[in-house]
Image 1 (cartoon, rainbow, N blue to C red):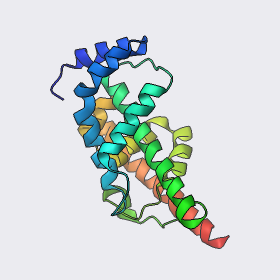
Image 2 (tube, rainbow, N blue to C red):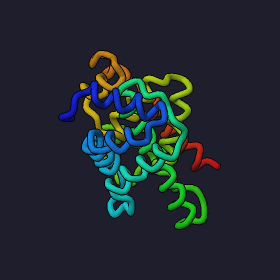
Image 3 (cartoon, one colour):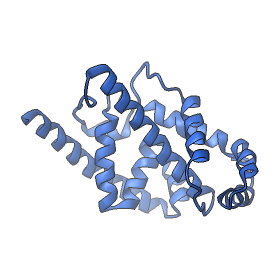
Length: 195
């Protein structure tokens, strides 16, 4: 990002205190990074997905501007919340598509070992969201690492910056989180077939 982090933090604090004009000044400063996050999210989606990165960014801004005002600590905190909102938008979109197209919940797709390190066009975002939500109750930071790396497409270094931890911590969290999610989602697929 080309802007000064202090400028973004100042605008985030002003917006948190109710200054709506601060949001208008903030959008151009963070839009490029949010578009990059959106492209990372969309790279994991199936081909022909009806939601485009630009629409995803706009929906995030809409939800941010309509939601309750949060106290943003800094740019990293804001980007973490934006990544979580993008995940929510995609999950809501997948759920709506699943209900419209199949008359029920999204289809479960078995998770393969390499899935969390490569794009997976047929990934069941709803099942991953459920597993990630359960994982967040157990280990919130590792869940955030997955959210930022897998959905947001952030590098190890960028994730470490957002979470304010070392790159070694991110690498360790990423490895353990992938193993946990693989077990969880593979177990979900097995239980789903047995029912």
